[in-house]
Image 1 (cartoon, helix red, strand yellow):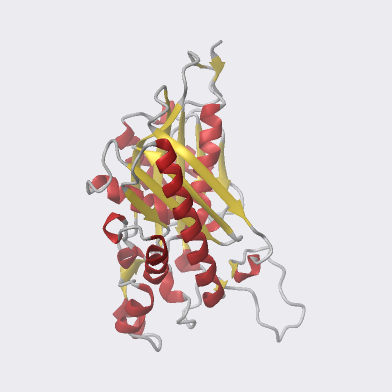
Image 2 (cartoon, one colour; image 1 turned 90 degrees about the horizontal axis):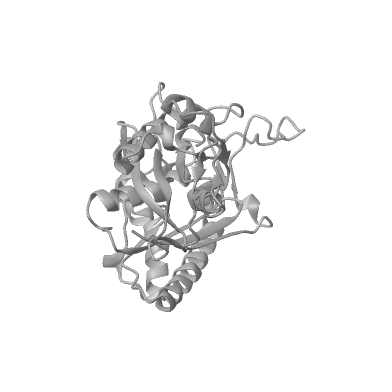
Amino acid sequence: MPKELPSGGKFTDSGAAMGVEIIGTGHFVPGKPIKNDDLSRVMDTSDEWIRTRTGIRERRFCDSTETSASLGIDASQKALAAAGITADEIDVIICATVTPDHMCPQNACAIHAALGCRPIPAFDLVAACTGFIYSLSVAEHFIRGGSAKNVLVVGADVLSRTIDMTDRNTCILFGDGAGAAVLSARQAPAVGIRSIKIFADGGPGHLITVPGMVTQQPANSCATQHDYIRLNGREVFRFAVRRMIELTQEAILECRELGVELDLLIPHQVNQRIIDAALETTGFPASKVMVNLDKYGNTSAASVPIALDEAIREGRAKTGDTILLVAFGGGLTWGSCIITL
């Protein structure tokens, strides 16, 4: 039977195995690059110190007119153009972010309004740096369940507005940006999302925190206020390496079972040392890894979709290729997605 779409339209499922394909991607970053040398002028650091510890050379910071929603709107417009569809054809919008413009209304609704979509579901999702992969999982369920044909997934964050510029161990890591992808139903099960795995462990969630307006503050006025992003670098490094190794090894085995070769790995762009440590253990070739953290730093939920879009536009990820997306972040959360383009 035809299935109802949120618009009241019909999405006909003939009963054939359904695929969930990425049909268009886009990204947008602010035009203001902040180089390592710029940071060395305002704190005790240097280009060499930052590069050797992280691999980051520069990052982008928003100006006073830009927000996570505005970056997400620009990325979404590019993704729709790449997909060759109009805003009227989108059935659901999901925005992954930890830095929304407002607690209410949500970024997804701002994106919805700017694109001029008809009345459809639009909501934000919070899973920190794993947010884009979490959102892909939710979008896949909408499509496989028959309640949507086209879903717009956005990852957008402006972490420059959460950092303490006197904390040289933390502020050097982060940047601003947005990435987006359009997922669509296709009766081609060997194309699109082949597997998604998402996880969380709230026990060590204190290792990465980003406060908000309603975050409880210390009762003692002399105590440190919760005003900025805080992370335990050593423990987060160990967590990230362990999870990236696990997810990559599992994906390699899963690809073998699917009878496909893993052509490209797109990890969360946070630290070159994390990527190198994981590759050393898994044996996955560095030549098949997409890295752009040297240009953008850690853009949280935007990290993976920005790298995905650049890989596609630069020809590193081509039609027919099977790619692995891997992310890990606050919560603590982690996840992976195997996709055949």
